[in-house]
Image (cartoon, rainbow, N blue to C red; front, side):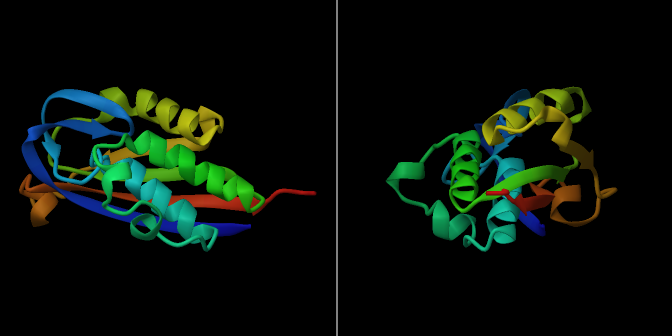
Length: 158
């Protein structure tokens, strides 16, 4: 078994829609980025890639035309395919989004379901939490959003 940790952060971009965990959240400013800037999916993908020693998000999904405006759920799906190709199985995902706003708890189950679907694992193996920083730092001031993820993977028995 291996454990991976991922982190991602994006600045606020009010001209874009907000997508977190594959869920579009209306009425909130979006995030700047090359793809859909889904900070949560990016942290999860990075954790999975790290656990399997398959590089990182930037090396696997560079800022080129293929990934411009891409859905980060597609990035998660591609990451899961890479892991399975190397005989790794995803055990679980535990994640936290750090943001001053919007309130994410009403979307938690839908996020977990979309992430699980992209990874082809059971939704009960995906935990999505959110936290504020009580006004501290760039996320607390509402200048951006961050996400952390921890994953467990194991070798597939042959």
